[in-house]
Image (cartoon, rainbow, N blue to C red; front, top):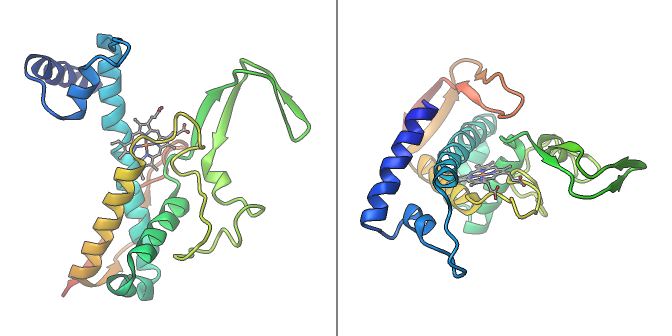
Amino acid sequence: MALELFEYAAQELESRRLSPTHDVLSALLAPTVDGDTLDDLALKNFFTLMVAAGNDTTRYTMTGGLLALIERPELFARIPTMSLEERKSLVEEMLRWTTVTMHFRRTLTKDVELRGKTLKAGDKVVLWFASADFDETHFDQPDEFRADRTPNDHVAFGLHSPHLCLGAHLARLELRVLFEELARRWEKVELMAPPERLRSNFISGMKTLPLRVTWR
Ligand code: HEM
């Protein structure tokens, strides 16, 4: 499947080369102000990264967020009358609560002292976002789902580094619009069986979430 995706990327890139549009692929093909361009492998890798990075993550945050609402029907019922700020805040708590990308591995570029331990340049370290988002020294009652948590400086989109998630704004918007629309159309949503979780130590998600929905 990865090879097929590479093949698809190659075709799409070729068609943009011939007739550029206003989309992301055309922007990637265009030279920067310094005249630099990405080579073919980097372009295909970037395409694959965009497809993968924006897919499971948003989808599993949606299912995790929905489960949190099913367990809190009064919160779900309140969404249509919430202010924009309240709905945005609800989405932030869903992001913290689900922290779908559980960790990332990074390589140290310089020596660092951390809680009495010396980490050396070149060491491989794993940043556990899922742990940080439930850190009781940072969040008040992290095991409580609080739709109005303030501040909510979670790291579901990564640490505030140059690699911070490129799709964070899109994902936030998708999540907010989805739950606004569901709450508008669904009178009630119930769980029909326990969800089946994905077996992974990288992505936290659900494979099944059987529901019964009562439409308005
Ligand atoms: C709820 C949804 C999402 C979550 C939880 C999420 C999470 C993350 C995390 C944890 C990182 C690594 C950040 C770091 O290393 O500091 C990342 C990077 C990235 N994400 Fe997302 N992401 C989401 C949605 C998206 C979407 C919708 C897109 C694109 C359409 C996207 C594209 C990317 C890309 C391209 C990177 C790599 C950035 C870089 O290395 O410079 N993500 N994301």
